Each structure stands twice: as structure tokens, then as C-alpha cells.
Length: 158
Image (cartoon, rainbow, N blue to C red; front, top):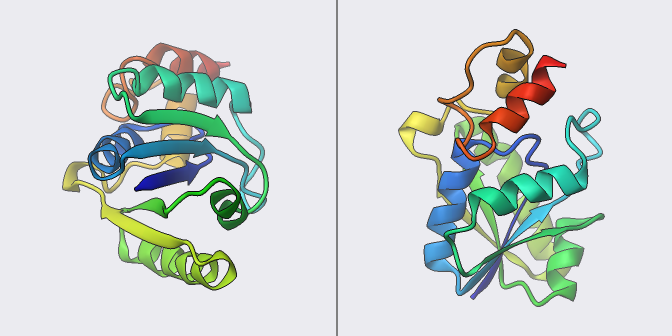
């Protein structure tokens, strides 16, 4: 099974890494799709920076590849033979939003969605929370993979 875990990853978090590791156990090949979200503010990191950070944190995973894309996730998945879209859930509000997208992806392109629940210790971690904490110079080691912590901290302190 070929999976796609799409997101803006602005920046990647330890919660993202956890979902990636778990999805890599289920999928024969897992793509991490760095995209844009027209509903979110401008990105702190460029496509290439986010791709590079994700490549750094997935090095040990041989069946995972980081890619970038524009447009709808379902269109990309269909064009590239993706069997399932992987989504991480932290809360009921995440489920409500993700369910709506999953049903749309199924209706438009026939692409299924696989939901993975975040571990309890990661449910309160979001990229927006990390950006807020980092702006004020606080240590991010509890939220960001150590491989990219320095890059993220530097950018947020600028």
C-alpha cells in the first residue's frame, strides 16, 4: 500500500514524526507531501526548507520519501497512484474537519483516508503553538525533533 501524509509542516513537530513512523509501519511506501494550505497564513519556512527538515527527521525510515506538491491532495494522490491518505488526529475538532476532507477525497477521486490517533503526550502540540512559544525564546525541545530544533529556534527568534 502506498500512502501519502500531506501537511504544511510549518514547522515539523514531534507529533508529525510520530505519525510518520507509525504510518511507515503500515505502508509499503510512504510519501510525506509538503504542500500549501490556502486557509493558513503565509509560511514561516519555504517549501525547500520544510522538505529539508522532514528529510532530516526521516533518515532512518527507508520506505519514506519527502515530496512537495501544489493543489488538492486528492488530485495528487490519484495522479500518483496513492492508495491511502494518512492523517493524524489530536482531538474531536480535528476529526470533524478531517472527516469532511476524507469524504470529499473519497467522492472526488476515490482515495481512502487512514486516520491515526496521536499519542496522548503529543495531542496538545501544534505548529502554531510552537511558533508562538518560539517567538518568545522558550526552549522547544519538548515539541520539535532534536535534528531540526536549532534551525526552528533560530528562525523563530528572528
